[in-house]
Length: 79
Image 1 (cartoon, rainbow, N blue to C red):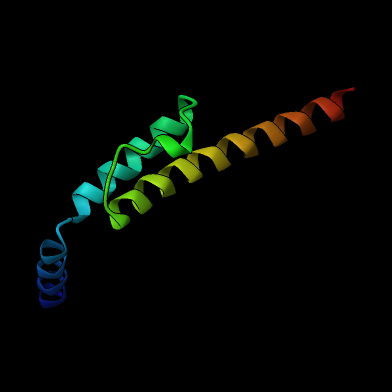
Image 2 (tube, rainbow, N blue to C red; image 1 turned 180 degrees about the vertical axis):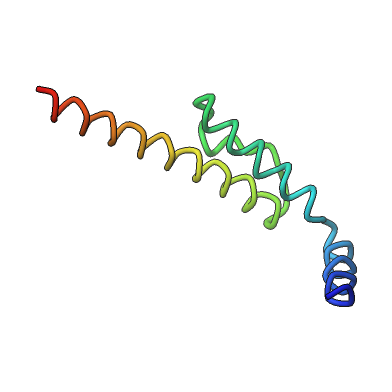
């Protein structure tokens, strides 16, 4: 297990990103969607980190859609 982590870490560093940087980009993308920022306004450069930011944005957008759908269902049951 430890050897695998070491290999993955070396590979991450070689590519110029690490897991923590991708987690940060994901969280920032998630917050950006929650604040209503357009997906095209990603502040990052580099395919891997952009993908992480967009994944966070997409997840937050989906949660918001699911919340809206559930509230619509609630109102239709009440009415």
